[in-house]
Length: 236
Ligand SMILES: [Zn+2]
Ligand SMILES: [Zn+2]
Image (cartoon, rainbow, N blue to C red; front, side):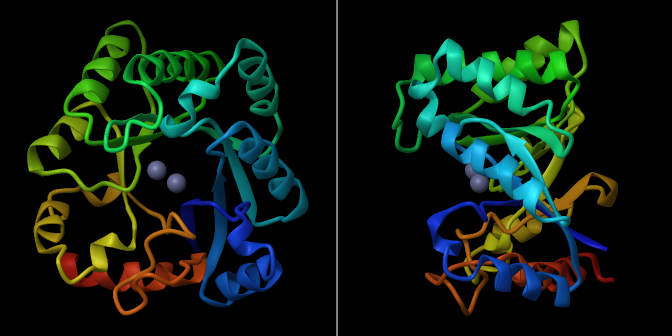
C-alpha cells in the first residue's frame, strides 16, 4: 500500500473534485493520505477531512509563513485538535527564511512551541525547512539532548551535508515530485544516500506537480510518478 504522507486536500484547489481526486488516488494504489494542517483553519479542516474519509489521516500545525498568527488560545485549540483519534503528527511546522512572511524570531518561538507540543503528545513532527541554514538542525539538536525527537524532514531539497545532519538526528526524509524535475539531477544524486527504511514519499499537493505537468495542480494519484523515479534511482 502506498501512503501519500503529505498533502493539502483541504485547500480550495480541491473544492470542485475532492471526492474524485480521492477515487483516483485509490485507483492508483494510494491507500492512505495524511492531510497536513498549515494554519489554524487548515488544521480544523484537516481533522474534519480525516473524520469524513476513511483513507485520510490528519496532522495539525502552522506553516512557518503563518507563525505570527499563533496565539495562546490557538495553541490550546491545536492541542485539543491533536488529540482527535486520526491525528498522526504535528505539522507542518518549522522555519522558512525564503520569503520571511513571518519575522524570524516569531518563527523560532512558534517552532519551539510545536516541538514542545509534539513531545508532550508523543507525536512525530512534520518539519518544513527552507533557506534557514542550520537553525532547524540546531534547534532540534538542543531538544534532542533532553528528549527524543521523531519526525520527517518534508519536501527535502537540501544537499548531502544537510541530509547527513537530518539522518544523524534520526529523522525520516520525504521527497515530493520535485525529484522528478529535469533540473533536479543534484537532488537525485543526494537522494541515493537515503536508507530506504528512512524514506517517505509525498506529493505536497496541490503544489509541485511532477515533470511533464509542472505548473498544473498536483494530486495524490501522481505519487506513482514519484515512485517510478525512485525505482530508477534505487535500481529496483
Ligand atoms: Zn512545506
Ligand atoms: Zn505542505
